[in-house]
Image 1 (cartoon, one colour):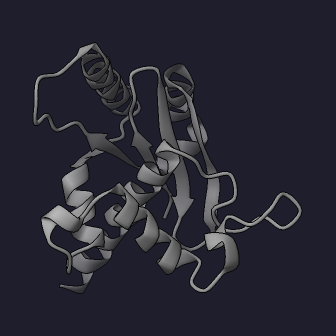
Image 2: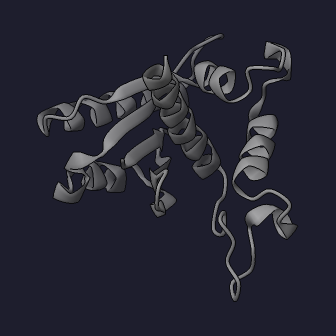
Image 3: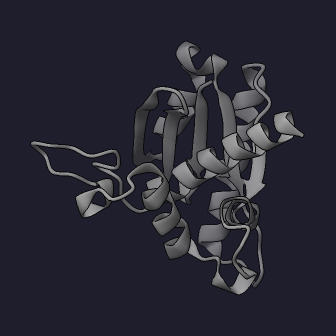
Length: 164
């Protein structure tokens, strides 16, 4: 299984291309046009695509509007390539990864801590590693964490559905 997860942004988006069996194929925070190019890649036509769905709780500014437009662009590129993307709100990702916590305690930092504990337990530097000895999360920054959380939550929800 290959999962392409995207945390969309107004100008740049975080993404991970991850296999639960093999690890990371690619990740980064890149200009949105680059994400479109990646989505069009024939190699990724076999991937499950998961995109964070934007949920608004307050008045949206221009950045949010631009992000929503890019999210729609990603969906269209997927559909043009016969891929049906899954849209998942961040609140669902937090609920799947942190079911034992109260909603008020589920935040980006607790999600990040959960991922470190799950994929780099007991490892110094929380799995980041160094240039000479890269760890599982070497090179991760900003929105890449959210994209990876999205991929893991998608995978976990599939595993749970199969087990049910």
